Length: 168
Image 1 (cartoon, rainbow, N blue to C red):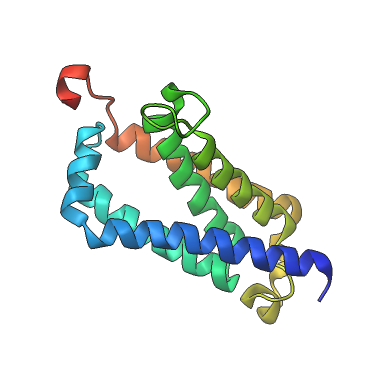
Image 2 (cartoon, rainbow, N blue to C red):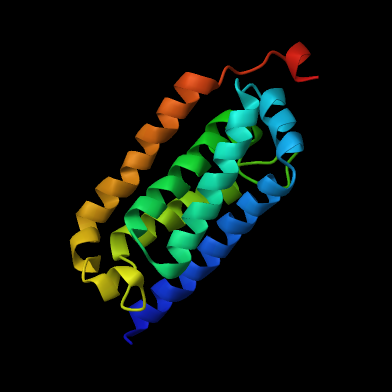
């Protein structure tokens, strides 16, 4: 394996584990997750909690195995952009700031974009299926960028920023 293939394997596995475990955490407490989604201004909060858990676990598994990698990256980017826009953007860069800044979610989104552009690497299901070379570069970037459109659709459909009184 070439060094880039090893690097992509390491990056895919780590980012995949992080987002999958985030989804597992949501799944283990769907009611609490639904309440949280409602408290930050999402309608249909039970649906949002379930969808969040399913998407995050699915994206994680797809990244770990390297299957339809730019599609998984698009899911990661969409998830992180929704979190950025609805929660973190108004709290500054650093995650340790009150309300949690956006450094974490933007870092994961950028990692997703890098994975989509570079491709899954030779140690992936995409490579085993012979589709990796069709899904990297600008094609991968475009597919991953579609995650921003999905995020915009979710925000437009389900999110209405709560007033300070509603958030309490």
